[in-house]
Image 1 (cartoon, helix red, strand yellow):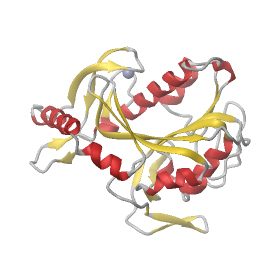
Image 2 (cartoon, rainbow, N blue to C red):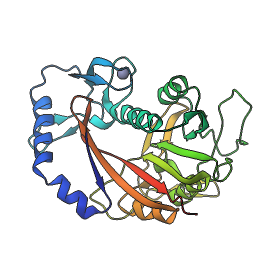
Image 3 (tube, protein in one colour):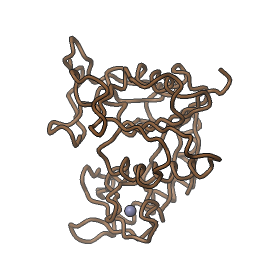
Image 4 (cartoon, rainbow, N blue to C red):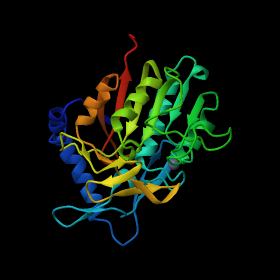
Length: 291
Ligand SMILES: [Zn+2]
């Protein structure tokens, strides 16, 4: 797997204009251009979750059109393993969790908070590493009292977590932050619940060509007020989907640092054989151990 760590837009620009990226784009373009038929593109590879060779499938949901007219799949969200159904972003999170857990001397002492509970990723995590203390939650609505009964879905508001300060070793949040009203508050909460030396592993859509965040909506008296045409992302708990409040730009790295993460990075990854295609990245924040 190729992994590039960026802390500034300048570093990212150098990377994206490098020969390595041109080659990747040619491979992806070739896959799309030579694909015959209306069905999904099949790409043989190895699933890090299933630990076996699979044919990944890329559908044309939310595909985009290259300047030469070729339809390019949305690799980030729709290049899936047919067995575990996880997309590349989720399989990458699995890989990072495995690498981190395997590096621990005593994994039974670790607490990991994941901002999801009804998901293949959370099910995988709790069954694969049953000795780790996992805490999963979903946002169930503005009037839910956290936390709910044992065995139930745990409700948590990312902007006001009920978890104790310095009680968690790793926070994992996958495509949640764009849906909260105040991302800075949510990042500060993630930092608060982390022990010194802990880390946050985050994914959310971010436009690396944009310096600043843009607000799409804001809550006024508990109701969303739209500043830009509303966009919703799929949500298994809501037919309407989840409203996008923020389009992120590079400002989010400064927000991570302001939240107490001394080291905040955008990490670009790519691996043909693992089905990580397109320009994809995750964010990592390290909370200083010197507190
Ligand atoms: Zn799989």
